[in-house]
Length: 400
Image (cartoon, rainbow, N blue to C red):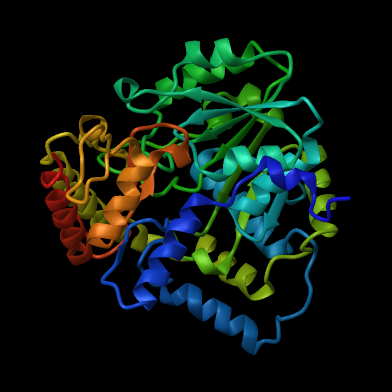
């Protein structure tokens, strides 16, 4: 009898966490490493949000709470959806978890049966397929292309749906590409979903507030109200509010689904950190002016990275509409050889050689389901980005 669960053979560790861990290990060993792998803003959590957490500690708000969130946070989430997305939910339609990842995982665990399929556009966030596999389902990948700016078409979505399709996972702006679907592009997808009433929508809106150049964010149930009853709208405070370590994600959807997700959470983690919940109340209800200021910095960093990487012969780097990633193609570098004689056979070899020879840590494209690419997180300082891109330029120029 095998001691470990056979389910583990269906999944792999997170590649983004693996890259970050390796970069940290090299740094600890004395190497000069610039990490561009982690999806984490370098901004500090805004002071008014930190103050709310400190106030919660001082007031003794350190006990267990309701399994999936305090009433005050659920109401703040309902108010946010009404104010920003024209979506009306009641607190019993809201679930709060320890990060966005737990919310998605709870929903899949609560709904998947053997043979159920989940449609996932590629490039995708690395955890989507493995969470589906852990829940007993089957991920079905719908690959976008550079020509479509890494966004799938309505025709692709329609062709991928089968009688076994249970969920369609949607992420805009996207991790890893930063690509954002316009209202009209999203309406074409929702029109397809209206024709397939057995398919539910799981929309990951974590990068909603990180939108640039006039891009107007929209979410599926907002674009097509007829999908309201079969959409789980997921979000969180991690990215835009620079609260990654506070671990608060949330979702709103049909009460039946939220009740099922609560049952899963009640027998796994129970409530999210109480202090973090009170800080999240302030994040959603408090001043929002810092978001626009942070976005100006992200735009400057994005433009810096796109400019420097686009100058490299063999690399093409689209300009993303949001998030804090770029997803350059290295198609023109495949088959070339490094100075130590290693052939760049694929994007994983490229990323490995780049780290070993220059100390720049990026995530290879195969981890996101579409190659040959790599992902750069530009959520770090201008100085670090300039130095990293200079090293990438030098490395690529040395290939023969």
